[in-house]
Every structure is written in C-alpha cells, then in structure tokens.
Image 1 (cartoon, helix red, strand yellow):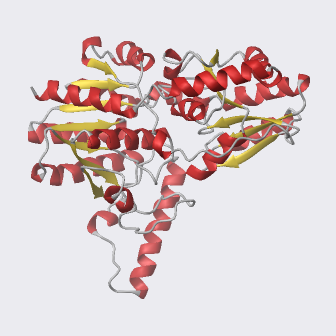
Image 2 (cartoon, helix red, strand yellow):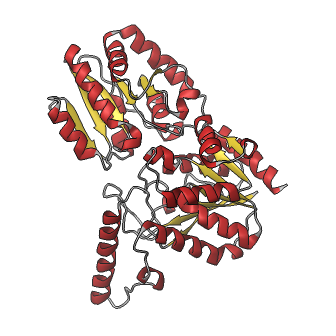
Image 3 (tube, one colour):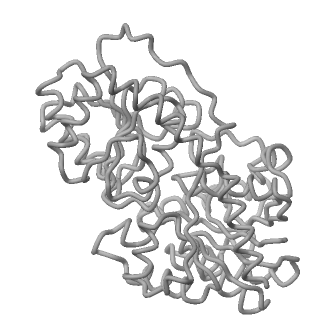
Length: 423
C-alpha cells in the first residue's frame, strides 16, 4: 500500500500537537510496510528559534534516514501555519524575502525562485499555492490513497484526487469550531466542509470530534472512522521526579495559550488554590495570542509571583517540565483529542482534564471537570496536592493506562481503512 500524505507540520518544526500526531502515525504506518510520501510546506522563514537545523534544505533528513521506515519527504515552497495572524504572516514573509534578496546581492548564486517571488499575501493564498504545487507533481508519483491532514491541505487533497482518480481520505485533528467557538471564519469552515464531503472516508480523532462533524458539517455518520491517537513511548527520555523535599508543589499547564485551550480558567483556578494552599507554584508553558493577557490576569489577581510563564518548550524542556510537575491540568474549552495528558501520564504525572475533550472519553484514571467550573477545578487540584494516596493512585494507574494507547493500533486501523477505500 502506498499513500501520498499531505501535512503542514512535522517534527522538529512544530507549533502544536498535529506535528506530533503526524510523526507517531507515520512512523507506525511505515513499520507496517506502508510506503509514504509525505508532502510538506517548507520555506525556512518561520522555523522556531529553538530548533537547530543541520540541513536547512531538509531539516527532516536525520529523521527520514533514521527512525522512519518507508517514508520520504517532498517539499513545497509555502508558509503554512494556522496560528499566524495576518500581520505576523506579512512580517515573516517580508523578512524572509528581504533576507533572500540581501543574500542574492552578496552572492549571485543565491536567487529567489519563481514560486518564492509569488508568495501569497495571506494564509488562504498560501493554501491555494500549496495545492497547485502539489498538483503539479502528484501525477508523476506512485500512490494508492491521498491522505490529507486538517483544512490547510484539503484543497490539495481534493485537487490531487480529482486529477489522478485516487481516493481521498481526510483526517480531522481540529475543527474551526474548536479553535474559534461560535465565531468561526466562514472561509475556513467552507474549506473544511468541502474537504470532508469530497473525501471517500473521514478520520476523526475522537467521538467528540465525530459528533461535531455530523452536527456542524453534515457528514454522514457511516463515512466517519474514529481513530484515537497514541503515545510514542520510545521518544520519551524521562527525567527523574523531585524527591519530595521541595517546599512548593508544582501544577503544570502545557499547550498553546489561546482561547481553545482555556488558559484563563487555569489562572482563575490558581487564584482559588493559592487562597487555601499557598505552597504551590503554577507553570504555564507555551505561547499564543492570549499569553500577555494571561500575564496581566495573573498580576491583576495578585498571583504574578506564583505563576511562571516559560514560552514555547522543545522536547527536552518538555520532559523537564513533566519531571517538575506534581499535577498536569488541561482546561480546554474544546479539545478534539489531547495528546499532552497521555504524555504526562506516561511521565508518571497525575492528570486533570476538561470533560470537553476527546481524550476524556477513553481515560478513566484521571480527574475530570467542566472547563468553566473553576471552583471544582481548584478543589480537585488541592485534593491531589494535599492527599498523597490520591496522588500516588493517579500516578501509578495513569501511567499504566497511557501505555494502552499505541500508535501501532492507530496505524493498523488506517491500513484497514486504506484497503477498504481502494477496494
């Protein structure tokens, strides 16, 4: 079986959970013998500052030749990120093109390519450019199925399926309703809906997401296959946990600091926890459009000295954060799945998650709360910190349960789905 997989991020260049999910699924599928051509946008313009590139033309070369089997990458000149505002996108693009022009001035061999000259002025033009670039070379590729991840690759998937006659499978890691609530971007919604209805089958990462696809997008239930995410245990280099002699407990938030993830509920609950249990510190790890608002909120509530904002963390830094934590909290307003709780459990950290998450439907050895109920959230945080038996039970049973969710199982389900749509 051969698949043309379309994505917009992949480790080490990641901004959220989709890249981690793509890596885990792709690695497991390759181990099953599925031949994967992974198409990625790449310009070098928006690479994270904390990622050291050995080869700027192919930062994935070490992974491709090492841990991944039966996987090769094809690159498309484009800048795709759903987390860039129009202003930020324009700034990054201008800086990148100016840098290329400066290099061209000092080195005649460095020039702007024809596609670079025509970078789109907004994310939708970039999505369109990505689609046309993929359609240019797709007919020369050998594949049985087109597999597109999230809305920015759906137009490319639909175009490739149309000109090659190959079946299209789209995977939904997040919807516009998750990211924006009721204030959806109509253009993004239209692209999402078109991709789901054009696809032969739709993969949802949870039943929570499946219900959104049915009631918000009108996708027939029988067309949707729920395939839960897993955890790549082999990649977790665990750091030792504190020996219990530290004076303050640590509660961790790890994720994008944006409306979808509910950071304000975490900060408000922190205020209530500190009122009854002062020996605790809160870590908010991540970045996003609400970061400075959360810093202001913590200061306004009088707990600025108790909340530490770390910014974006890379792999080893994430492991150290888990090692410091006595509890991990995910207060998401709408979470299609939620990989971080599984990673926390794999790192022996007790977990408190919102009931409005896909991962809540498959986990039992965690605490659950409605994202908006900051009183109950605070009560549960205090219970874990004050009651060692509860902390130990969640830690031991959670670690055991997390290991039940393997990428190998998700890959097997994808393989069977591929065989069904090809047949």
